[in-house]
Length: 456
Ligand code: TRP
Image (tube, rainbow, N blue to C red):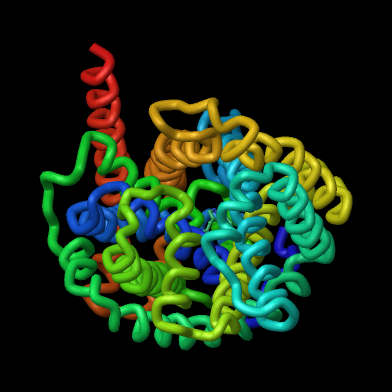
């Protein structure tokens, strides 16, 4: 079982795990959900959910992969049934594969938008002269075919990288763009915080005004934590399965979570000063990133080259995440069904392509199809992240918390004899058995209560 191709270095693991965690979740989704849910109070719930739910679950997924050396379905099978009858919890493994294909279907559409901004800024900088950000955005939203075309280009790129294999595909370039992007982001934050909306933005983000949240906010905070840490998709199980056996799981998990959270907060500090100084509504929804960045560039008089670099880095981050997402389902086909890697890449790519037609046309041809004010892309996002993912997360935490022979996992948690380290393991098990399922169940019930009370 241990013949599986592993990451050759610790770096390899970090690059892949961080590469999958950082993505449009931080750049595109974080500002949009924080904006929609009223800012500070939501952010507080998000941070609490990160520590109480995200961290224990990330450890659980990594450990599942690391000890079984299998991808999602196999890992749950090995650890839960321990060779005996199949556990129904294995279904959660299968569910997570469905989730990753579903996510791929609209995540790639958003990657297509980013790609379009990249190309427009490229043309602006090198050929055509100054870019009108608002026009790019409007043209894009009104043309479904353009979105479909961009999405196809993106999917083909992903499938090509995944078909080549994880080590060659992932390790190389994440490490190169990440530091560049972080420095660039810090510079843009510096520019953005010179705008007049900064004080209001800080108040919006960091003052927890609980009157602004509603029945759905708690589950949205939890859903976003799962999404941004790539939990519930089987992806982290796969990355865990490539981890070197000498690596310590909680330490790795804490680093990934900390980096992801800090980057999201930075993006918040970039976007919201622009929102408040430009008269954009904070609850604009999934397009907020695409409206604010061009506005920042034109307001502070930055060269379009900055737009090009920003969207290029964003695109690469989205590409890294899409590749990780595809990898999650491809590795199941490879491990379980013995389908060749290249063929699996093509199969998953085609399924995602057939599904992406719906979100690609959601802002134009299918614009009139709305569910409680959300178009189809928004609805896909809402259903997957605020309903399906939390249920998968409960399944995984119960599977690991109750069905796994935990003795075998202790050594992954205890790397020295200090009291805190020894206690960590017990706390983790408690979190998986009680905290994670209870909090998610409460949040789901509150949301359901909210929906019922609206209907009645
Ligand atoms: N976490 C990614 C982001 O923030 C998105 C994502 C969710 C993902 N699940 C994944 C990426 C699985 C790779 C694999 O954008």
